[in-house]
Length: 178
Ligand SMILES: [Zn+2]
Image (cartoon, rainbow, N blue to C red):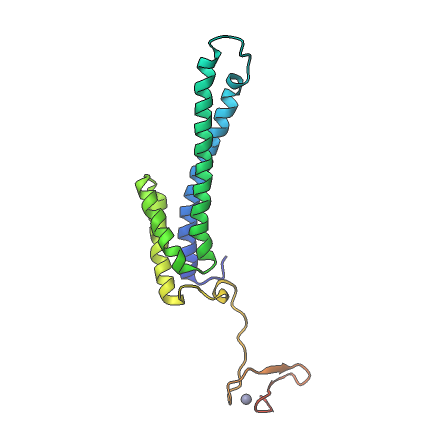
């Protein structure tokens, strides 16, 4: 379970679901690509002494090249989506994640991926709220478990040092134990 504040965690989840749907899309295209190469391998690498053989092999070459390009395109898009949205949110760069989230929400909608579109739109809205709350770039402390509170002197407000020998907190400014 995450130590992050609930609103930062929900922005992470929204963006992650959007990114996952692009990963899923890439894996499907990769699966089809691998299947095609496996299924049509014999057509591409067999005895080519028969005069009509290129009539079959040339279209197969084109389709294989097309499917491979499609899978590579899917990988590049998936990486782009991840780098511009989820990675930025996880680094606390909410402001710069906003526009890409909206961009991918629109792209997803136009390409018929309603699931990804909804979650990128939610991530966009959440990134806006987080920017307003934590600033354009969240301090790293927000993204990691909260450190123990630093003791301060009730008289002068300076940080106290713990004197292990005395077993007490000491203020260097007031020169007193507390
Ligand atoms: Zn003091």
